[in-house]
Amino acid sequence: MVDCKKGFKEKNGRCVKRRSFFGKVKGSRNLPLTIILSIISIILLVTIANLVVNQIISRPEINDFCDPDIRTLDTREIPIEGFALDPCFDEFDEAQKKNNQMIFYIFAGIGLILIVAGLFIKNLLIQLIALGSGGILVIESAIRNFQNTFSVIIVLVILLTIIIIVGVRKLK
Image (cartoon, rainbow, N blue to C red; front, top):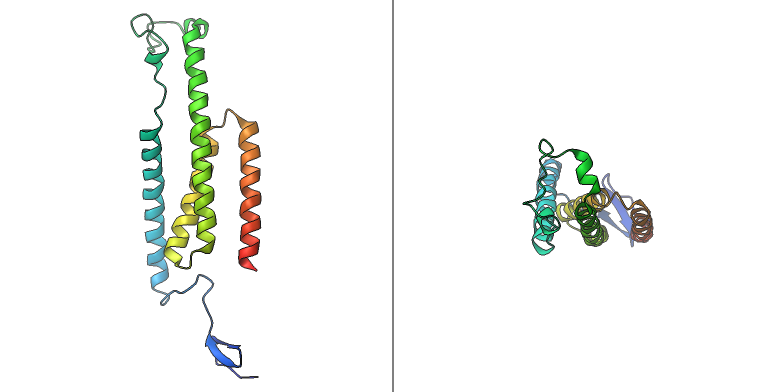
C-alpha cells in the first residue's frame, strides 16, 4: 500500500491525482467562468431550439379558421359571449392543442437526449449546457401542453424513469 499526499489517491499501487467532482477543472478560478458561460449558452440553446421549432412547425392562425371580415378579436367591438358561440374558435382551439402536443413531444425528446448526453460528456462546460438546456426544454414542453395533463404526466414519468436509470448506472 502506498501513502499518497493530500489530493492524491492510491490506484494500482501508485499515487494518482484525484479528479474533481465536476471533472477536469483547471483551477478554481475557471469554475465561475464555466458556470457563467454555461448559463449564457443554455439560454441561447433554448432560444435557438424554440426558433427552429417555430420555423419548422407552423402555428395555427385565427384567420385560417374564422373569417376576419365577419369577426374580430377586439373585444371592444363584439361581446365575449359571441365568441363562445362561434364554431370557428372551437376549431382554432383544437388546432392549437394539436400544435402544442406536437411541440411537447419534440421538446421532451430533445430535452431527454440532451440530459442523457450530458451525463456522459466529460467536459464540464458542455455537460452543464446539455443538462441545463435539456431540463429547461422538458419543463417548457410540459408548460406548453398543460391543457393535456394526462399525457404530460405519463411522458414526464417515463422521462424521469429513463433519466434516473441512466443516471444511476452512470454514477456507479
